[in-house]
Amino acid sequence: MYTVKDKMRAVMSFLDLANKRYSVRSYEAAEIEETNLLEVLEAGRIAPSAANQQPCHFIVIRDPVQKQALKEAYAKDWFWKAPVIIVVCVEPHKAWTRQDGKNYAAVDGAIAMDHMTLCAADLGLGTCWIGAFDPAKIRRILDLPEEIEPLAMTPLGKPAAPALPKRRKALEQMLHHEHW
Ligand SMILES: Cc1cc2nc3c(=O)[nH]c(=O)nc-3n(C[C@H](O)[C@H](O)[C@H](O)COP(=O)(O)O)c2cc1C
Image (cartoon, rainbow, N blue to C red; front, side):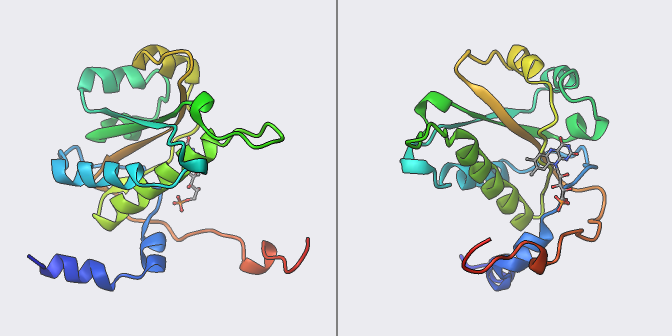
């Protein structure tokens, strides 16, 4: 059935959604709906990857004990207080590698992560890219096999703080025509 909520979502342009997403650094402790979590993960699953190699894995963490353990790898309180944490991992050896040796696993993982953060924003949920974690500690806490790389994490939950205005360079500072 086509609901009013669906209709509201349909009228939001992509730019509205991209502007709506922001780094949420304060979360309500309330659980999120399972269907919302599945929708966010689905957005990550359908993300494109170089040569369609699909080197991404998503680890969903809800267990309070495991969340407390993650505190060792990224100490900010707001991070592990969210009801869900998603860790995006990649398998570099399965990702596409360009002729010059450049491996695209991190690019693929970043696209999946971005799909998920935008989907979460669409659902009214907050996320925050976390890259500044201790990878060795994450490996140990999550039992990652050697060949799996933890790329990024995000809390997922209802935002408890409003967005700050976006600080971005002007387009002229990054736009080039025809050559550098
Ligand atoms: C790859 C990447 C890693 C990031 N790592 C962290 C992080 O470790 N901790 C944090 O608080 N924010 C992190 N951020 C969030 C950025 O600081 C944030 O996206 C940027 O300041 C723009 O703000 P906005 O997301 O609210 O638009 C990261 C963002 C990206 C894209």
